[in-house]
Image (cartoon, rainbow, N blue to C red; front, side, top):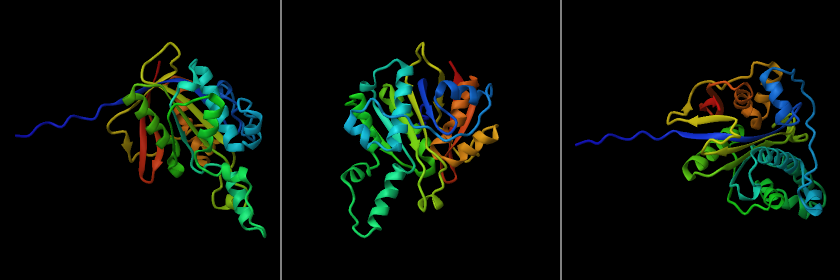
Amino acid sequence: MTHPVSAAPSLTVYVEGIGLLGPGLSGWTPGREHLAGSAPYEAARCVLPLPMALPPAERRRAGAVVKVSLAVGQEAVVASGLSAARLPSVFSSSSGDAINCHEICSALASADRLISPTRFHNSVHNASSGYWSISSGSMATSSVLCAYDGSFAAGLLEAVTQAAVDQTVVLLVAYDTDYPEPLHGVRPLPDSFGVALVLAPQRSERSLARWTLAPACLTGASATAMADSALEQLRASIPAARCLPLLRSVATQEAGSVVLDYLDGLQLSVQVGPC
């Protein structure tokens, strides 16, 4: 006698807050206008704010990757109206601290080959997560991952799964920074970019959108592109910016399906809808 196999349940989350920082994008509020097409987008060098939530000593040690990840994380949490100290988090980056990696390689290639303690301290992939816990006072769990150019989709998959299965609100922070030469020649990320999402398992009065990952969320379909050529160039050139079609659906309050770059030959499909 055979028994039917139950289909895996869909995973649905609600977007409670968004943080955004990148070339020509100085936050979610102005960024939403660019993504919705109600204001023209013009690329400009990303301006990284000082991480004022950090104590002075840690602030001095913070590099670009910490500045961008803390800026978007704080913006998203403030928008959600929740306490950062209580939120589990997922941090995802394709490369980690690119500038710090360059400086360590330069030191190792020099005559004395001495690496400063600060450089070594910031060299680990979970540095941004550690600085986040310091700045927010969070003792909640934090996952840190990397999936090369599919890092945003991998982080989203992890955060949505945690939120839906554990029935808890989760903060996702995805970020990338550019390498100086000569590493830039083989990993040509043009600038820094960061996005943060507060994802909840239930809808609230603050909910901005509903996102669902169905059992067949992995697909071979092509990734959703941006209609604006400059935004499409940004999406294609920085892994963390693969989030832009999802953010556009929030900005326009559109319903449908958004396909994101994930692993080679495999994409992540997200069903999106307004709240």
